[in-house]
Amino acid sequence: MEFDPTMPIKSTDVILHAFDWPYELVSQRAEQIAAIGYKSVLVSPPMKSFKHEDGTQWWQRYQPQDYRVIDNQLGDTQSFIKMVQTLDQYGLLTYVDVVFNHMANESSQRLDLQYPSSVEMAQYAAQSEHYQSLCLFGDLNQPLFEEDDFVEAFGIKDWKDKWEVQNGRISAGDHDPGLPTLRDNLHVVEQQQSFLKALKAIGVKGFRIDAAKHMTLEHLKKVWTDEITKDCHIFGEIITDGAQPKKSMNCF
Image (cartoon, one colour):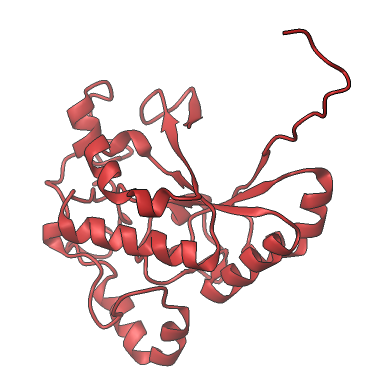
């Protein structure tokens, strides 16, 4: 078919990857982002992860401690909601990274696999009103995950072995215990679905699956039901060259 210069050109849905941007900063720049021509904004995982008054490295955002609370170096539940609402005012969609393959590597502080840890659970109890104001779903008096929700611990060595990549821990080598890998069981799937539903209720319109190649297709299909995927853009992050990637891509 020949090009017709009189035909209107359909605009494309260009995503701004606001990697590691604080939610407040995204809100402040929403008008500018829209004016430039972006149609959606992808932000780092809105979960609870380690934070410190002196700041933390970006990868801490990809080591979740809890899904039920947004509380990390980039902001909290309240600032996240404000960001989503502000982006919507300028006609921008909010997409988020979600980390469902693993939880945080906290082996230097403890040996158990309760998430959040007993230390975080004590903080929830001591600051009950504050954390309830940040709660997306569930009962903060109970852990999100426990020992039975994780697969056997071993680090991935052969990055070309499908089973090993999908069942082993992502680690930095033999000296690193790695990231605890979640099991594909009913409880894990239900918590992950509840998290996605809570974000959709806030107004999130898309999800980028972190470490997608480390999850089985069966697990992904259980989590992303027709109800959850309805009116949402779902895509996954794939690192193609093992632990020290040369290439990465988003798979749609």
